[in-house]
Length: 342
Ligand code: AHM
Image 1: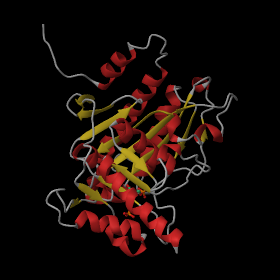
Image 2: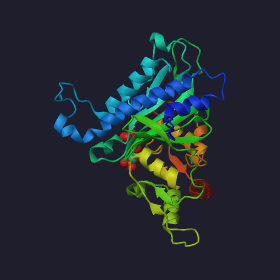
Image 3: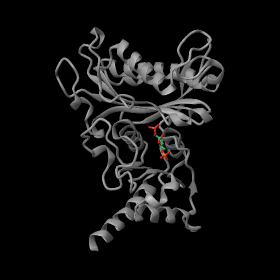
Image 4: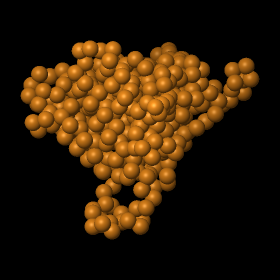
């Protein structure tokens, strides 16, 4: 008999379900749908360098097909995978102004909705930098035949599952259903995501800080103080810390998750709410980091406790290893106290 050590994502999902005799399998199927669409997106992302040969957006490639921008392609791919399978009642996508209700027969009675950033960091595609998909799954709260805005405007503490796919030097899917964080690497030879990083825990103490320092003049004094602290020489604490910023949230987050560190997209003087979207970027990553033992805040409040009021709402984000997020918050608190005293 041939024995193998590899466990595929599907086998893992099925095995995880065994402990829950009343599970309907709907969530498992939904995760499968996302992983399936991710494989198709991965195939296209890997061909991105060929775009000059095959044709650019709006052009027709050698097969006579219209070439779509990759972020539009990814959006459509996830949407169609989720719509066809019927395990999800609706989707809110970073690529769409409004949410989409699946009113097809298959989706009748489906109890989940998905918030998705189909291709985050897409400005990096042309230069072969890692990009990703981020997803968040909620249980519907409305009981109407069609899903409603309130199904999507749930705080992150109501998340059922979240995860991301990183299209990088290898392609990985990392997700949590609220207990552990597990990572699966795509084996292109068999077309399967295989368990490669079981029960990921982020280091308690990080040594990497990730922030776009070119905005330094737009940062608040607290953020600048934290950066100064990261750069300060302190042998005992292992400072200066390393600065690493790819400019692709999934890639920056993934590295810091494994190695330990903090990712910051703060409030800027010209962008008080920062850049990142609460529903599509901050919440799913916050759910993951907490399950991996880290923290995520907006500088003042736990990300997962923020009540969203709009689909495309933005939020500052401080996310990563406990000690670094705590330290960053100390500086922000000190700044607020100073301002209060003035
Ligand atoms: P996008 O929604 O246009 O893809 O932007 C999101 C990206 C994140 O992946 C990344 O962390 C951030 O924007 C980088 O922004 P900046 O260039 O301002 O540093």
